[in-house]
Amino acid sequence: MSPIDIQKALKGMDYPASKEQILEHAKGSDEEVLDALGKIDDREYEGPSGVSAAVFD
Image (tube, rainbow, N blue to C red; front, top):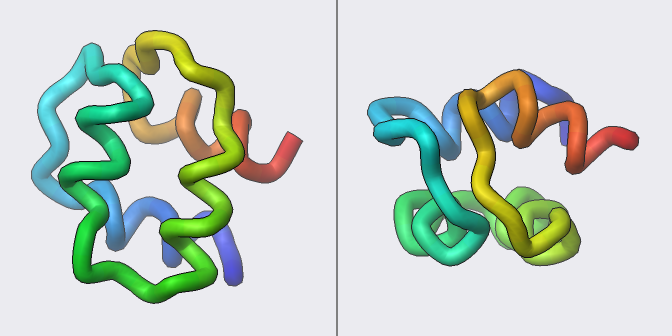
């Protein structure tokens, strides 16, 4: 899995967004992507780069 996979899963997402909103938006994505997003901190994210940083931190 790469940052590009995360970006594809979040395409069209409106920000700021909570972890719950991000997971809802990414439904239907690859299981590996959903698992990674499920492990991010439960907070509000300002954009896709913040989500990627949380996943790959």
